[in-house]
Length: 629
Image (cartoon, rainbow, N blue to C red):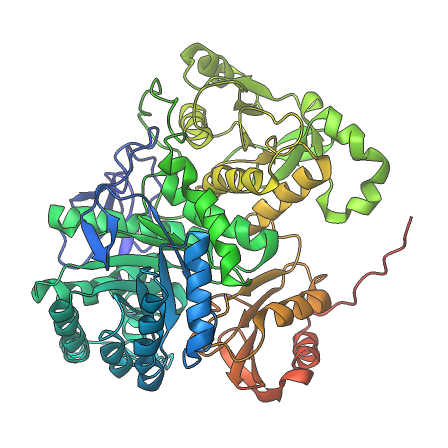
């Protein structure tokens, strides 16, 4: 089993030695790699620089190289319905979508891509089309005749997931790789012949049994899954492909992409393939936007990502404004423009490839414990507290816990060595934050603060160092706060958070809690994993998701997956407690974890049967009665 070892004196045991590392250097025990060699995913954590990559052409659209970060989406219509598909492609293109993906679940579906492509081009639209392939190599071969790019999932392109537990000898493993080559090589040849691009797109929840048994359900397994296919492509002198490492858990996603980039860099300069970013099954509404911004925003802030897709359980057209807003700071130069005077930290406070909460000592603020392994707290200003104090009972779980002015927090410039020295010289732990008004990026400033402070001092994170005044664009405030706070929380930094970029008190509190939930550091409500709709979906995902939310939204800490089909079924549900999965038209299968326990339930009865299943497993409570004030 491969494992990550930290520091220069890493032990040979099964547990990673947690050491502060310099400049993202880690030692990895990996196949065909010297264990003394170092990997890096980012040259400098305190300055923004976009990762350099080769250009891959998808039709007339370039990905990577000197091209801007591209925005993608996926239509939801049945691929056999040519007029509906064409209409949706045209709508997405008009909205600013630069690449459009269409599912092709069988060869019959893939054959209709000819008609869709013809009608799209006849309408004067030149947006490149991508076929989304799972399980069916023959569908990929057919699709490559008609569209500019093929997306293959290494976990199921040549494998059917059986969740088998077995030990593979090296010889057996090589036999498996040879079988994969026989399945995959014809597609590579066809893509070379027709000048098609490809995405080798790993999904966390659909790793093959072979990968699961050798590497586990880990970011390392995700990278190795993609590398199996990439090595075959390279051996055949095919290089027109991009990578992706998608997961519904932002922490897993971030770690997987970082490891991918580090591994690509270590393999050599000619492994500089572009990267596609996406968070699978992000969900809908604020939650879907927050989870997407945490996962993708964190990586974009480190210069990783050449094309993005925001996956929302909404009509695809609503994904485009979110994706465009998410990448805009990295296109117009506003991100990282003012932090050139940050000196590189000699040490980091965290392991970028494996989550661990930064260790701090417990202190008390307004009767609430901060740090010391306690829950991450929500802080606000006295002004916002006063504005809503009269209706705290109506705020439910979205109440602030600490007033900034009464918290005893010390605000410093992390570049000020004397200010840092004074805090570290204090006899007792101090509550510390970055001072407002500094011309530095939030992520970089708090990374430096965490590196400079002794670990015992708890840290208050802020989404921005320029508090909002007056009305603000809520979506922009949400995306910025999610990117900045979420990135730091996923690296284990932060004992409390405060949203300053949203001026409305109630919205700022709700945003704070929702970011904590999406980052997986404070679960206070039901967690939903809901896939975006596509042509494979066997029921109305949007209305069904809302129906399930209405029935189960009071179950704190329960994770429910809502999946439209088997592709996004048992594998993609990852660590959900319960699953609601389309098994056939108007028929639902219910899961406990990754195990199907109820089959072919009529859709009209399925939500009630899901409630019964949750009750059977002791996780159901009755919804509280809301008494109007």
